[in-house]
Length: 387
Image (cartoon, rainbow, N blue to C red; front, side, top):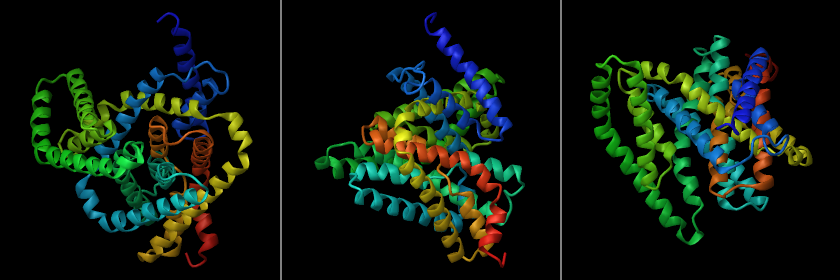
């Protein structure tokens, strides 16, 4: 502990200063953690070694990210917004993934790598978009509800990708059998947990809540999240799937908001650690060497995603201005992009130049996103004079 204390102290001080600085700039804290990981990581100052122990600890951050998304997930909300969620959101993810995968295959990449890149770039940032929509009082506007519906489907789409990506790491001869088995396991796990899980979760949380101990309640939530994550991992699925299911089960109970409040700080610290490890993956020398390609991917991603969302929104009857504003709002990559890239990297599917280019372009898209979203009205007025 004594040898590691200076490193931990430096990481903590750097994170505090970086988060404070980025908040002054009105940028998301996750970008501050990226910066800390980049500067202290092996490719710049080399203070934080990229070792297995650091990556294992950061995986807890992914678990609680998925738990949080599951906690915010509502079946009733999904049903009420089904036209936007399934229609526009589903079509956007399918088209975006399909086009990006086709481009990757044309460039000579294999199918598993293409799936990881396509899935990563199809996602948008729930954290950035929701925060800016709330700050601008746009959450209940037409383009705000449209953007939120598409984000809701993207969150759902992450779940099968979390099952698919580890399976893609298997030998090609066994791929079909492994994918089929993974799908069956996932379906059985979801069926069992949703048939019996909601009732058991309600009764158990009520029993714990009657003890009137906040400490016990928080420990119980952490325990249930990790137990379900471990069960799905033992079943040959992703541990993040179990965390997502735990969040969904709790979201259907009356304790949803209490849980969300109690674990917020703990979750944010672990997520910060995860984003620090993602920053450690970014190689500055490779970024500089491939800057032209990174900028091409960045511009192509923003323009293409904005175009796809806007066209789909028009096809579903939205006004030109609303469609364009939603497209601009969702044009960036998201936090799940890094989850999928990290999962692909851990399974040996993506590495080297491909990882560095996609990682850098995704990060830059999130940096410029607040500035673009804040000007979505002016952009919409420019492209849709009738708005």
